[in-house]
Length: 266
Image 1 (spheres, rainbow, N blue to C red):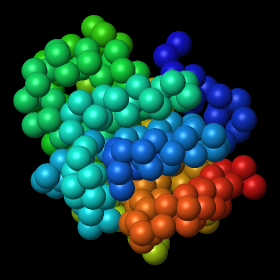
Image 2: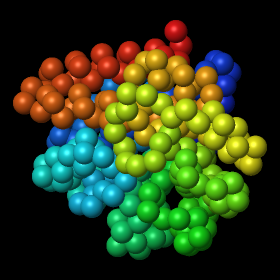
Image 3: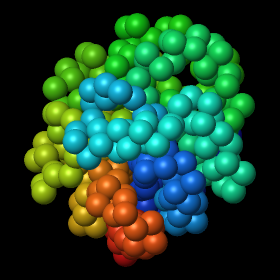
Image 4: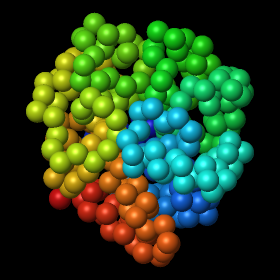
């Protein structure tokens, strides 16, 4: 059984949802990013989602756009990104999922890119701007080397397209809790439960919810309905507002992480 499946199975045995934490690789710099990922690995996080810094992050709100900007400014590139993954894999066996864009995959050659990230220790990839209709080459190459392909379902996705997405996906399905880009939200969408029921009726894959989940109460609420909860901007904010003091940054990040993950166990 692969690491992603093991994470969901373990959470199911503990009668809770998986906690998936997003951070941008290399934010605010390489060494601090390693320490942030170490905090994730040592916490109750089940799956680590690494954003690959990109100059045109269309699906990201301001918080994650600025994170990518900080990482790129600090010198993050493909080679250093692979090095970062290897450093993380050296201290944890928790699944690593990439949150990326197709240009970054295509530019290095699809098979070459996938083989490189697999060797480094990546378990799954979510290519945000690659729809299932155009993903055959990536899905085929990923399947051959054992990388899972995660796809997004939006609140506006009609049921007939959900079936196409779920038939193409592997690992898990990512449901976006509201239309738009990533970012902290004060409330969750009212129709989320109905949407999750519709998706679950069309796949046996775990279904996770992200985009906007930012409080312990929201984590608990989503965890009651979904197989996994994704939190990103609420954690990335701890990095962005403390770039001048790494010690304070790591302390606030750790405290926020403890509060959020407790939503699934309290």
